[in-house]
Length: 169
Image 1: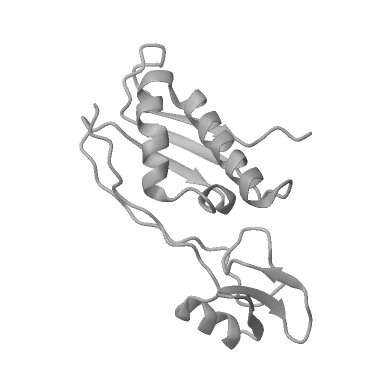
Image 2: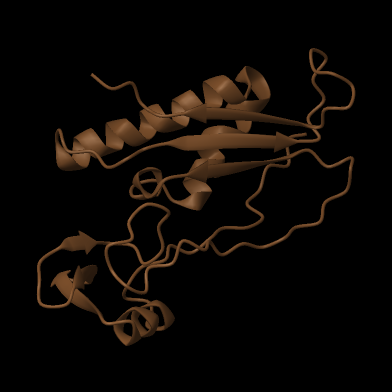
């Protein structure tokens, strides 16, 4: 119950990654370095849209941007309790994967997923304020638990899901 450890982390789909950049440029999209190692995607010959990711569900202005996620399959025993933090890039901007485990593992056991996901989003928001003032990227997070024993859940249920994004002022 207390052996919380990082099992898998993903890689952001950034335009500076060789395979992503090649696909984008072959499709006719410009990839430009805009700020010391930061790259953005533009329609050829324009300054639009300036995306920082090469895969997205809603941003389809440039050719070569995929709506197809990459994924991995993990096989776990039915007795294993495990959870996933699925979050927007704004969460991961100032919180790395190991920090996310440190922030969530104990709180998840003691307070549950609803309070844990709220805590993670609030921590991210505070880091954005500290580093960027009032500007803040999307900081949405989901925590999914599998094989969690919950006395209030129906017996056939082996998962829970909690979603949180900051309140909009």
